[in-house]
Length: 487
Image 1 (tube, rainbow, N blue to C red):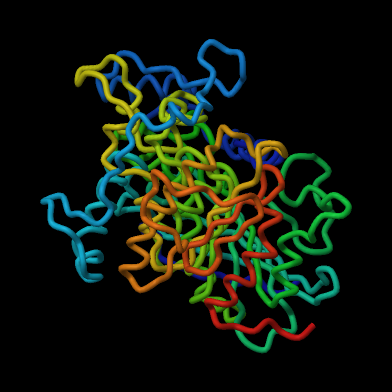
Image 2: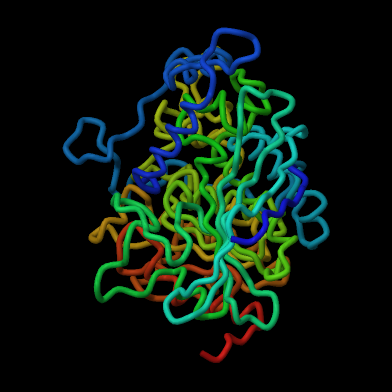
């Protein structure tokens, strides 16, 4: 093992990734002191934290979210004729004063800041200005082979300065693998999830990335495809940044900044916290000479697909994103009544992903009355538009293989269509469709829309982006104007 090195960088601002992540998360939470003094984080259950936020907002009752199980009294709607109760989306290129945005400079200086403010205040929360710095340490460096290719792997830990509140410790877990024979710095994809260094035995528990080889006859793992094409990859464990539950909101990076106390209504949720972690990972990659920091991307599936899109939208240093099966809270339109709904995100099972203020849009009874999805000032098409003009690939599978209708593939396609005008305004080709998101027909399965910097592809697999990597990598190479190494 090579000598340990450290780097100091600035900290600014539905399926789990496997049982192992839950075990890791539980272990991290177990290390935290219990409540009992001002110097210890508050230990609440998820239900207690959720109720506290409802009390802060003056909400007396939330509407229950629809059920994903057919035959239930409140089963989710899958009738397309009932799917658009709020058919008109917020204008993406119209300022709040009613003026149209026709120049790129007005997007950057006027409209984009308006959209960011609405998302931060009402939907995803704000990253506080006083988030501590992160010191990265390489705890292990190996030389190995991945498939037929020699690689260098590093196990990394990003320790967040907790001197302001020592009761909470946050150590970001990441590993980086790059081709050993690269002649120049390589592009890198950061993957939300958990993996092992090449040559190390993968975990035997089923359910997540790194948990054994793919089924026979399927494509090679994304990691092997990336290395074969001359890319590197990094696994970032999101649960080492912030727990994936409401009980963890007084711990992790959110709890550290709040000194163990509950969130305020516009504080960040887990999606932004995971995005913050990815940004800190990029801080490290900018110091690694093996990495082309101008060609770093972010990827995730399901809840981590939501986080990947959020990361890309808010940190303009990321060059490319692969958004896998992200659904509600990701690429799916909030205003769609199809599958998962806003009320699922405001319930106790998922509210921690969002800002506390988002609960208002699931309110049935409150001091301010009742609100619904049509009252949200922004929607998913604007989140996608915040990624423009950078490379943005929206990926889904099919319900028959497990990428459930619950995710609303059609609603996500509509959002991508509606984001197109911003890509074009900034000089980037979009999906190549019209701007009429109400009538544009979603492409057939396995039909690619990959001519522009905004891309769409629905593969014929399940709840994964695995079948789309062999399309994603050459698509990104084309726009990066890079030629893969001869192998």
